[in-house]
Length: 240
Image 1 (tube, rainbow, N blue to C red):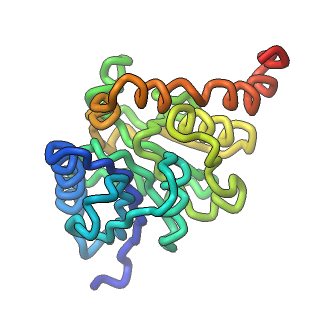
Image 2 (image 1 turned 90 degrees about the vertical axis):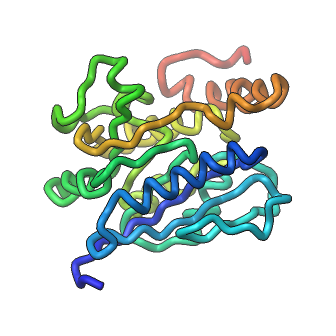
Image 3 (image 1 turned 60 degrees about the horizontal axis):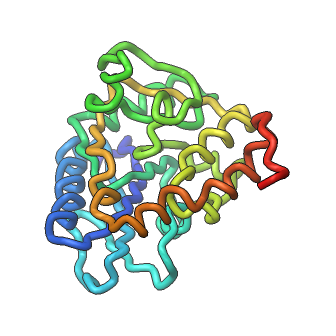
């Protein structure tokens, strides 16, 4: 193994309710492993699986864990983070396709700019709809679904000393908004790396949920989000 190898901890959340969704996670893992030279970049992969009756099944290439606590997006991410120790962490949805050398490219600005804390790769499905193209440089900013790709957050582990654990009050929706606001208030630098490509198939799992579960995941966090951030962002929430 090369002495200059870079280790990256990958935490992926999965909910394999069906064989199709199980395959979505498997496809993401295969594309991840095939994306880089293992002599240069080593991925330490934790899959946090919500489908408990799948246990003891293990996805290829990493460790699969089945938490004994109720689902929460940030709660499950924290479980994965707690199992890792590399200097870089990448928090991922399962419905991703990693393009060749995405990690090589996303590491470049971290090595060039010591003050950089966080980054996201570009999605050729989503970002091109916003008028962006691959390989147009680094785009700095904290806008969710613009510079910040909530489905793939890449950051230095030492950033956790500032932001602490991810807020587990966010079960799903607003988890990435909370992350962007933390970057802003703590003045942490983030960039979208347009030469790093990770495509997001967008809500592959979420769209399989029944209407009640969909609404629970998407809309029941609104009040807490407004109480935490509304005042700081100049909105009034006293009447909520």
